[in-house]
Length: 241
Image 1 (cartoon, helix red, strand yellow):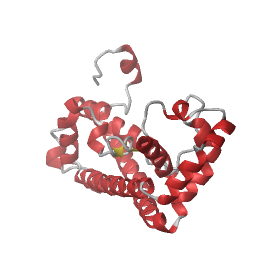
Image 2 (cartoon, one colour):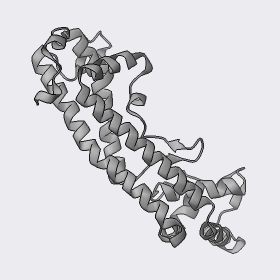
Image 3 (cartoon, helix red, strand yellow):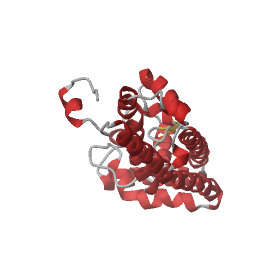
């Protein structure tokens, strides 16, 4: 694709050592993270964390590159403005998704629907049926934190939890009831905004991944540099071409 190539003047300045560094510190880390995130987006697993209040996995592109390699990222995107623009678009959509998840979390955690459900499923009788205590489920956390943890699960469309999660007996039994809160009139508006933001980011990911792979393929063939130097990476030897 012609639009993915830098100008001829700039292209002459790029040698195989630079290409190798781009592959190992920028392009491959970005592709690995973007492909993992694409799966999360398809499954609507936003990875929201109420403390400190951000998306754990879905983050701006720079966070997937080691800090010492940020100059490599800047160099690469300067020479490939189409990629730079796509990354900027990605980061903007991540920000929107994070903001909408934050608003949904606040709405869910403050809702009467969740408060009522929490009181019902943690009543002495309900806990007796589960065979657990409130302390077993939540440890030393206070009730506001109990609500926050459950709200986080709701926002993230959390599936059935493995048994090593202390909250798994409660969540797994009542998961359907907790997630049904998202359809309540007082909450569904914010939930819809999260879905729209997630879909917008999910639609961008394949295009961004495809363009990065196209650039990597072009550079690999132009400079006789393999996209991934597996043997050198395993041996710990310098990755030189």
